Amino acid sequence: MDAGDSIVYLRFPPLAGVLALESAPSAVPDLLVGRWMAELAAGTSGGGSFLIRWRAAAGPPPAAGDAVQPVEWRPEAGSGVLRNPCGRVLLSPGTEESTVELVAGALERPACLEPLVEAALGDALAAGGECFLHAAAVELRGRRLLLIGDTGSGKSTVAAAVAACGGRVISDDSLILGRADRRPLVRAARRSLWLRPGSAALLPALHARGLASQEAADGRIRIDRERSPGAFRLSTEPDCLILLERLSDGEGPVARPLAQAEALAALLRGTSALYVTDDRFADRRRRLFDIMTRFAEELPAIELRLGRSLLESTEECLAAVADSLP
Image (cartoon, rainbow, N blue to C red; front, side, top):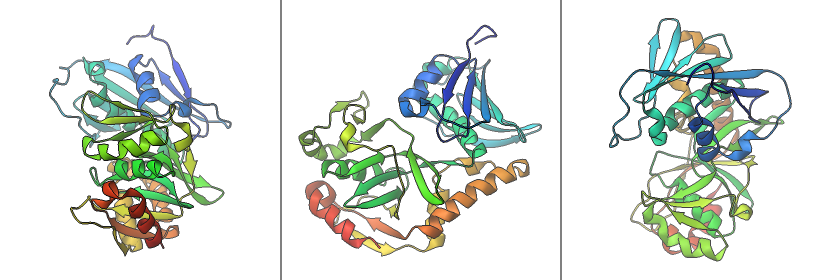
């Protein structure tokens, strides 16, 4: 990357205006379009902009065996820093821009690069008053559900089960939280639905609905929305929040009401945007906290534990889930 590199402009509907990637290496826009949906590059109206600059830095590349690392907040004089082994994101308080600094060889490990790209996008979204959240959203039997839970809690499996039974998937992993006419709104922020090998029992039902699948090198199964558009939507206005617990060996489902404070705590765990605790970013943090507080206040919520019936008797299990919703 040097001064001769081109400037890449992508338009993001969640933002008021244009997100510019200055001197971005080609792998970055490829990652944005591949990991995050191509629809994010569609045009939008309105003014204002957010700039993300990219630059190279010395340092060893991440080792091939290194696991994907999330970003961590490190306060430094002059600007905040979110970092992982691939590099760091420099946040500039009071400005609508950030800088991503990549160590040598980082572009050879796109999986490790993703958390840095996500952190930079999260900062841009926060500047526009919206929030990036690790969560799923589906439409099931006339209900619009926001599914939150830790990694491995079954968000992707539930999303695939909904698709297999004729419902719609917004996203199984990555969402953008915002508002539409004062109502909660979630937008998809990922192109594909990914299943772990343990959820392969859903594939016959997915294929029967015409959804195409492809096995990745790591054994996961990819369902691409562009090849199966009828099973996906780009956004929805959720009317219920579900905190998923890890799949159990029991039959399930077992549901209990969730208090607003519990729902809010679960939402807060789903974003890295609040890692930035520096007082210079207090306004941004307050906006994000307000978004999640409104979701927790306005959406009835339950904690849900699913068992093997989700894979063995999918239709009946999802019918029981729908019956348990407030």
